[in-house]
Length: 168
Ligand code: GNR
Ligand code: NI
Image 1 (cartoon, helix red, strand yellow):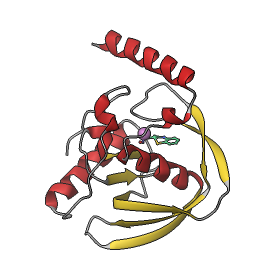
Image 2: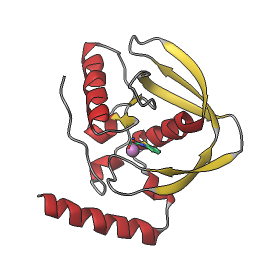
Image 3: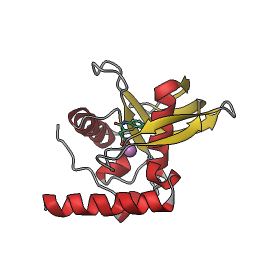
C-alpha cells in the first residue's frame, strides 16, 4: 500500500477530463487500495482518481467515522431523482483550508462497476449524495470552488498559492 500525493488547486491537472476504465484488473484494484489509504490518512470522506493524478473514472468513498463502509465506483453515472436541491458546506482535499456552501440535488441514482467489474445501481441521499456529486465533478475537471463567485475563487487561489509557497 502507498499513500499518494494529492494535487492542489489551482494545479491545471485537476482540470483533466477522466477517461473510462476499460478493464477492472489488478492494477486498478491496487490503485483503489492506495486511494483508500490516501483518503483515510488525509482524512477525507471521498477521493477521485483525478486528485491523485490518475485520469480515469474511479472514485472511492467512505462517509463513516469508523472506516466501516468503503465504497468503490468505477465508470460512475449519476441521474438526479428530484429537482429538490439542498445547501451543504463542502470541503475538498484539493482545496485545503477552504469550506463553502454548494447546492446540489438531494437524491440521485448511481450506476457504476464495483472492484470486480460488476455493474450495480444505488439510490442515495444525504451526505453520500453530496459526496458522490462532488467526486463526479472531479472526474469532469470541476471543483466545488467553480460554484462560487469569481471574486471568492480568486481569493482562494491567492490564499492557496501563498500556502504552497510557504510549504515549498
Ligand atoms: O473529505 C471531504 N469532505 C467533504 C465534505 C463535504 C462535501 C464533500 C466532501 S469530499 C472531501 C474529500 C474530497 O476532496 N473529495 O474529492
Ligand atoms: Ni474534492
